[in-house]
Amino acid sequence: MSIQTVIMAAGQGTRMRSSTPKVLHPILGKPMLWYSLRAARTISNDLPVVVIGHQSEHVRQAVAGQARFAVQEQQLGTAHAVEQTRALLEGEAEIVLVTSADMPLISAETLRSLAEAQQAHAGPMTILVTVSESPRGFGRVVRDEQGFVRAIVEEADATPEELAIRLLNVGVYAFDAAWLWEALPRVPLSPKGEYYITALVHLAVQDGLDVQALTLTDPDETIGVNTRVHLAEAAAAMQHRINTRWMLAGVTLLDPATTYIEPEVTIGQDTVVWPNTHLRGETTIGRECELGPNTYVLDTTIGDRCKVFSSVLEHALLEDEVDIGPFGHLRKGAHLAQGVHMGNFGEVKNSYLGPGSKMGHFSYLGDATLGANVNVGAGTITCNYDGVHKNPTSIGDNAFIGSDTMLVAPLTLGENARTGAGAVVTKNVPPNSLAVGMPARVIKKFEKS
Ligand code: UD1
Ligand code: CA
Image (cartoon, rainbow, N blue to C red; front, side):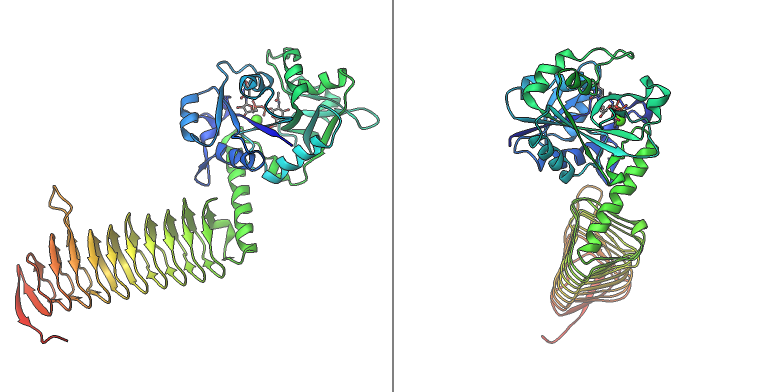
């Protein structure tokens, strides 16, 4: 079956009261529209067509490469929105599936079921419906005595009897493509002066054709975002969905309600996540790690059996058995090799710490390369910035940096080099040597070990 997908996203979203277009408001770090695109992309080989209008350039840039676009200059209604895709899609597929960017919880499985239901159906369209006691402004699905769908009536246009209907239009539709392109120009203007996609139901019935309804049972999927209250509901539902998936995959979340895992994160089995932990962006976490509480991880790769306690990790790389925190901060380009220990109040930026190196307390390493088993004493600072350049520091294997050492870069300390407490090191320290004082001078050379 050949399918083309359309995502309506041209509306302003007035009720959001925002200068950001509604469909770009983020849910777990991704614009709302990203979720509709992801679902749509799994059911068609062709990129979805997004109908854009309000702040169209902004929307186009936010999802460039993930979609094709049709511009709706004036937002004259949902049928008019679909009409704008005709030039791209007419004659391209047997089925056209239409969804809305403000329904981010609609799953790929639901879109697939809807397309399959329409494929198996003789009539021109299948609509997704739900039964709910809280109609939230959704269109009411009117049926006849035999249960056949007759019309969708918008809340604003409904009679009191129609308002009492609890069968609701979710706003996702699968159409026989040929019928859709023929019928769209016949959609009449609504009393509000718009062309409603929902009017197609009535047109099909007038054509003597049967409209099929597919019932959605998961109420979370039907969350539509029209206000920021709905946005919070949608975000909570998405959080719940993602967290459930990881728990079922073997990850322990001690408090799912305060665990925020963005959709592209991956987590290995038997990892435990403590409360108030945010796993963001393209973060990858290995097996048997312990993360949190109070931890923020962005675009970071973490190996197996790592521990990260009350820390912030951004654009960093941790090999296996790394232990960080509390109150560590890894910044862009921090790479901690196997078995590194980084204790309280450490900051590492654009630096490599070799296997087994330790940095226990109150240190800053920037633009530094440390070998294996280096001991970084409490309060050690790389003075890497002279106001103009970022200068490198290199420290050899097994070096021992005394507490409160200032390493004035550019600087090289050899293997087994040592510095005394409070040293201000301005010159390179040869291997197997001890430097002390301010500025530090070499006072001792060790036997080669
Ligand atoms: C719509 C349905 C309603 C359904 C509800 C479910 C219509 C007329 N009504 O109402 O039956 O219960 O969704 O969520 O379709 N859009 C455009 N161009 C336009 C108008 C809208 O692209 O000219 C887009 C919007 O950006 C939005 C989507 O279409 O993504 C739906 O529009 P919205 O105004 O939110 O419709 P609802 O009032 O929610
Ligand atoms: Ca809506």
